Length: 51
Image (tube, rainbow, N blue to C red; front, side, top):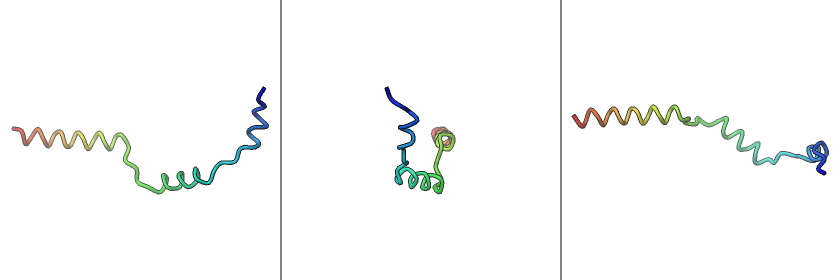
């Protein structure tokens, strides 16, 4: 049987994960709300042009 406490004691996070974490925190990410607002603005602009 697996001893989870022992396995956790051997765990060491990779440096890559920490580097990615820093990059994500420092960047200005577009979330789904931003994407949806952009699509809505594009859609409303196209409706005005169709009329």
